[in-house]
Image (cartoon, rainbow, N blue to C red; front, side, top):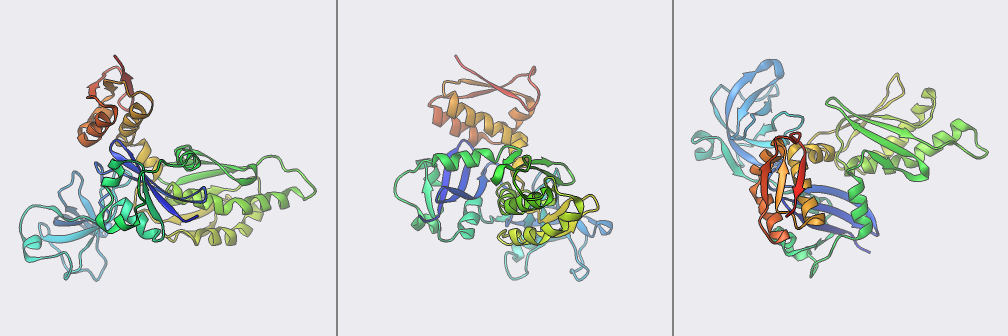
Length: 368
């Protein structure tokens, strides 16, 4: 069976899942109402030079300024100067996007580089185009006309005929990505805890049984599940500093896991690095931060707002009014297309109403 890139449409977002023979190989969310901007080109202006941070803040026309790192050999810049930049990292952790200077012979032009207000010049690849490039042999399967409509012309020759719902086993694997607990082979499990500074992953194993000494069995169990754990890190796009606490293995034995960890990381296109084992016995991995992690996307106000719409379409299509906390309401006001998608799917208008009694990130459907 060949690889298939599934495009599943929900209000305000597409779920993108690459699968082969019942196994989930890759996953991403595509939210047109909240683009990540990675790869986008902007006409920009220098807001402030900050030598102490090794760069400059630039106005690119978004709510938050972008940050431009400046290497020592960068051309001299001045405050207020017009430049052309390309976004290299999405807005993460409450910070703006990171950008780089565009090559002088690409998106830059006399008009765009020297006049006008900061604005978007050219869009970068969508999440669908990125996944299609990573999996060039995968055919595209869409679940609805709405999903088929977002497939760009260059990818249409890869689209299967008709509409194909996401297979149940792949749907279950995608849903499991929202859980902080990860089931691993051999009865092991891992718990993911994101923090502002790092991602902590705690591994647990069932009591050892059999004839092997306990530490030998624990080493073998940890080593066996490392490929599955690294695949789950990729599926959730966990990035930045990642610390893994192996299950039940003595600290002095954990150095032996470094080679298997490094081998398991080779399949990751972001090329993460295993930096070693800390004095506390934690395996330290550095995975480049380019796009928001899945936990960050799901737990953001926009992510929770889209979850409300997805709930209505899936479980409560008779809903006429969505009672929303203040941040949920604001997120949906910023993404009216998502509300329109929901209304189209349920066949009637959906009113989104502020409910002062609800916490700002909570919601409740109200049916007639």
